[in-house]
Length: 272
Image 1 (spheres, rainbow, N blue to C red):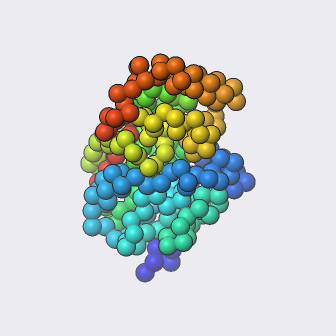
Image 2: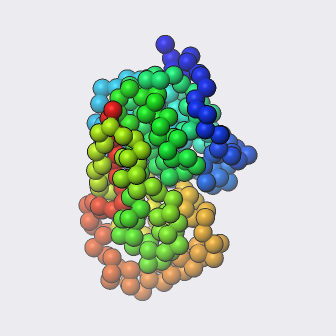
């Protein structure tokens, strides 16, 4: 039986406000998400870690599924994504995503063997309700890919656009809070970021600073949409200046050949 055959009302939590394209979090993906999939390709290293955490689970729920990154092929995956812009970018070989939000999952208890949520929990209006729903509909592991706000300032971007780091620090919930809300047994592990990371979140460019001069790369990181319009041109001018003068390389040049960067990325796996 397909999970979509069991669509039922979820909780009594009021539904979150939604934007024109359906986006339910703080970011408007109707405005910033049109070319998201071009910059945010699943990274094989992260994919392997997520698959290992999912184990042998067949019925898998992906909440905040976006364009489908990290959804395992060959499994029975049900995707939930409120943004029409993001749903439209899903590859044709993936299942059509259900228009719903984390706080109101339209499934019966224990419908799924496992659940996953990648780069999304920081955008849920009601984190507690969303995690409670994930736990309710999932019999096995809940796998969350997110960032630790306490470690974001390890990234050199803090020297050039501290407002972006500050914004992300406010948005991302602490791993300990996620663990508390999930309950059960929770493991939190550092996920090293490879130098050639294909998933273009901010720290993916730790050794490739020129890549963040691309406005599209910044647009694929929602934090930039929350800062003052003056931040981007200032960032662009300062980074170009330091790259041309050699100042960036004098301070951070070793990162260009550093195979991995242990930054803020965390893999959280909760089991009942």
